[in-house]
Image (cartoon, rainbow over all chains, first blue to last red; front, side, top):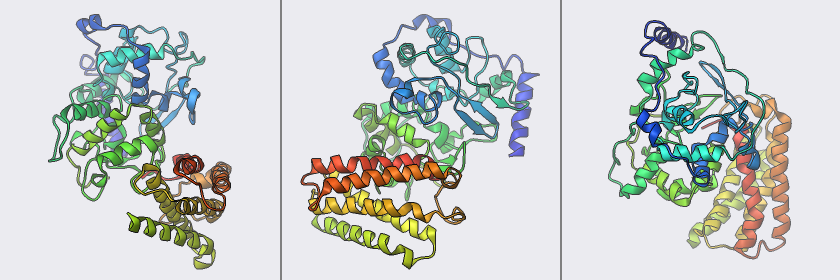
Amino acid sequence: MKKLLIAVGILAVVGGGIGWGLSAPTRLSDAEVASLKDGSPVKGEMVFWAGGCASCHATKGAKDHDLLKLGGGLRLETPFGVFVAPNISSSDEDGIGGWSLADFANAMTHGTSPEGENYYPAFPFTSYARMSLGDVSDLHAYLNTLPAVDGKAANHELGFPFNIRRGLGLWKRLFLDPAPVISAPAGGAEYDQALWERGRYLVEGPGHCGECHTARDVAGGLILADWLGGAPAPTGDGKIPNISPVDGGFGSWSASDIAYYLESGFTPDYDSVGGEMVHVQENMARLPATDRDAIAAYLKAIPPVVGGS
Amino acid sequence: MRVIQNTLIIGIVAGVAATASVAQASDDPIQSRQAIMASVGAAAGLAGGMMKGEIPYNPVAGKAAIATMRAASVNFGDYFPAGSDAGKTDAAAKIWDDADGFKAQMAKFAGASENAMKVAGKNGPADLDAFKAAFGPVFGTCKACHEGYRKKN
């Protein structure tokens, strides 16, 4: 762990000091900004559940209506320090109510704040970068309909050099890539191409499944060759399972087993969902059944990661 | 299908028997609670199979599933003595760090399954809809506890 910290520290210092130009935050192009259209809050609600926003930005343990109060405050304890989820409610003062759609889209797809600072990738913009600008616009419209929550969340608790946001610009150059992870369905399984692509979009984009289910390298970037092969839990003890279709593991789940799990929270053996996955499953249960089928179709036809967690 | 159903019912009854006798059968609390949880899993498998329509609904089977949950709910929480966090267990440290919270989860499990027993009556819930109404709340308590009190796996 110490080695990791030093390695990332050097990267950050290099990014913050010598590579000033390389570490500049990126933004949407002028053409992309011009193409943004106001979204639909009704469609945005589905994007909200698919994206799992409430799992970090609502109060810990929130259920039902309290999931819509996005005042932040959840503490993510990681090897780099403690990240505190910010207030993303519609409050002008303390939340993001005063943001333009372009501000929001820059945050979601470039990890860049309205003030031009880099966000830490505890906010999974590396996945959200794969979202369509239409979905981002719909989500923005929906978030604007949610209650304003007063009060800013606490600051992150990060030591030097992780507290230098500029250094993240270099990290983003290495690890922020909106291209799909899996280019085409793998294996001999029969699949419906459109369904598989919808599943890929949900898993690799808004669902940000890879952020926990894929192992990270010393610099904290996802090891894409081991996509969804499982990883040590980013917070707390235990591990996040391998959900690639590996023999003797997740590969024994049928597509309908996966869809049923996402709907009900029960595995094929009738063990129940646990840990942070409870939130994820309850979010997935709110999506249309076809979306759960799409996720299942995708997970059945990606390369198996043998020897993952 | 018939064979599966009978096997499951036998499994459930064995599970209930195991629940009743673990205190004598084993001095190892980890082994005891895992045996109880295995009977819960088997009961959930029977209940879930019937709810999904993979196993034909039968009131006797419905009652067996509910009674297994009930027996487990009044016993399970007794097998987490101090020190039994060490060993081959998925029990999270939070069970001991937040003993009141864990107790509250156990109380929810016990309450839901007691209620289901009342609905089941002497002969078990008459049809699948009655069974779903009785068993659904018991099912809901599984993940409420697994969310915070079981190690991630």
